[in-house]
Length: 242
Ligand code: DGT
Ligand code: MG
Image (tube, rainbow, N blue to C red):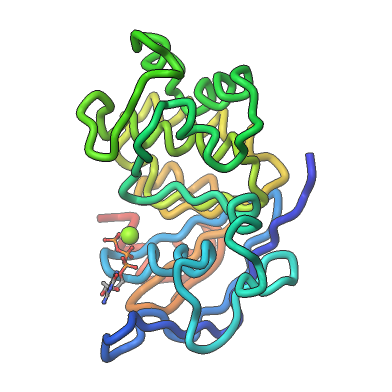
């Protein structure tokens, strides 16, 4: 398993085009390969925005975002897809088949690899039940795939691509506790060696992270393990005890 994908933010400031105030203000942190970094913070704190700078939907106005020492602004779009796997907060599918969606980041993936990714993402059962299996058609606004299934397909799609960096934006909060536990156990193996960044709400997800970043109003206001932050960080205590 290759160990790479170190993500480094250096004093990053970012505001959306046309907005008056920056959404991220002087954000610095490192997320290490082989580790899980959890990001927590209240709604609007800037968690999704932070991930969007890693996957380069936007560029920062100040500071730098680098992966393995290379600024993400030097990575081409195609290269980006093999480096960063984003599982968005609002998971989306492309018009096509389940298979073509899963192969998006690595067209040469075999059916066996797709099924293995689906197994880990807890999506194999529902795909197997579809009349056409991997060849079942889905559409962007399709009703034949539920929101939860869509999310699992997006997780499987990221796994198929085997990126160095996984970004999970609130991907597990809507799952029941048992599915959540099974999914994350399998993911631990499937993503071993990569850098995993998880925006999370559930305390069980946060607690098992190697590092937790606490965000508030566009800044990182705390960093550490669960026990360290419980001890030292008022914002963290408020969030996990609410
Ligand atoms: P969540 O998902 O509700 O827990 O909140 P976060 O932490 O993911 O927050 P985020 O990054 O979506 O939003 C941070 C701030 O940026 C918030 O004031 C809303 C604003 N914002 C987010 N997306 C956009 C956008 O596309 N355009 C503009 N102008 N503002 C945005
Ligand atoms: Mg968000």
